[in-house]
Image 1 (cartoon, helix red, strand yellow):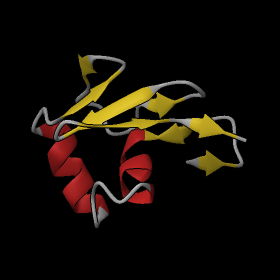
Image 2 (image 1 turned 90 degrees about the horizontal axis):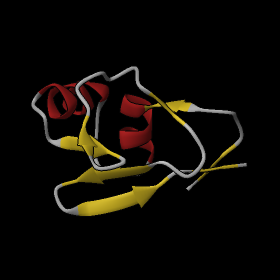
Image 3 (image 1 turned 180 degrees about the horizontal axis):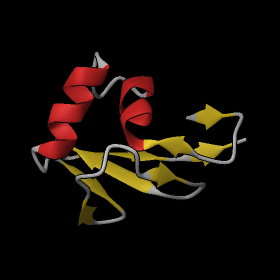
Image 4 (image 1 turned 45 degrees about the horizontal axis):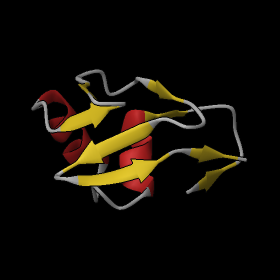
Length: 67
């Protein structure tokens, strides 16, 4: 996953990697406690992800790689 920026919001990241098909779906997943960032449940959809963060959704792990 390559993004040309310093960070990306969690809800945008979930849409980008295909874990959520819409922003609304991403919001519900995050608020429902279904998403972990670096091993901890994250309920803030505006959480800024940075290089090296790992996001887990439904037992699938996505690594954040910023370019």
